[in-house]
Length: 151
Image 1 (cartoon, one colour):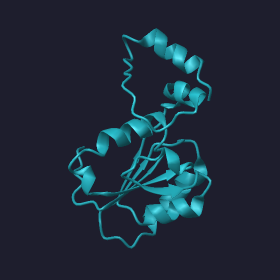
Image 2 (spheres, rainbow, N blue to C red; image 1 turned 90 degrees about the horizontal axis):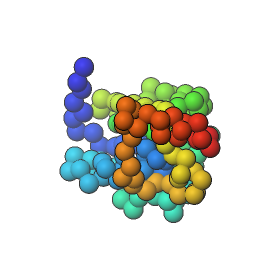
Image 3 (cartoon, helix red, strand yellow; image 1 turned 60 degrees about the vertical axis):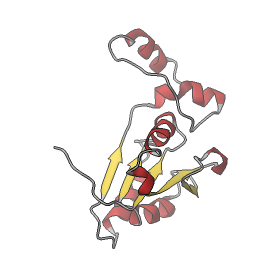
């Protein structure tokens, strides 16, 4: 099923400084469509934020903050931990209790934590990566990444 998102005005992201989140933001922000959005990101350290986004300082434990952002957004992109139940419930409450007329979307991505090993070890988050991983050609190195993941 293909869904077209028309005229969204607000977008919130969790995990913006993660491997996937940082890469996603660096890829999406230059897009003419995305550049029209008011993008907000939940980030623990504002110094790690992309300069064109609105920073919401906090973490996944800040349920009321996450709920408020979800209530005021048309699109929620959760690129943070998929196993954090409290933040998932906060997003659900926010989307369910919104007074916004727009169609609402929740995009969830998971399973990329092993790819963040280098960034976790170096304490470097939210920067674009040019690395690519092929499930077939890079199978042995991908399995090694998973095995040696610090998380």
